[in-house]
Length: 69
Image (tube, rainbow, N blue to C red):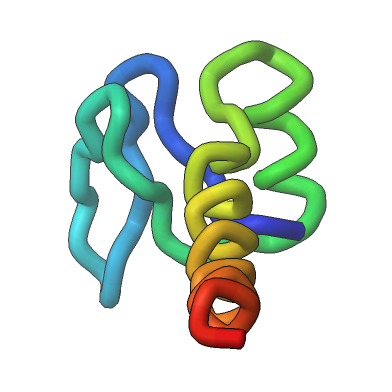
């Protein structure tokens, strides 16, 4: 599953310590069932912005190569 972003304050265990992830912050790596539950309940969302940013970064070298040709 792609990186999840908290949509509400979400308490998770990180290295054995209860940590509250604030809305808009990435959640740590979670089990598939836990991640699916957070998405289903609307507490988290897949980070589409990061995916789009990664695609744009991959496209930049190709665009520069075209402009130099």
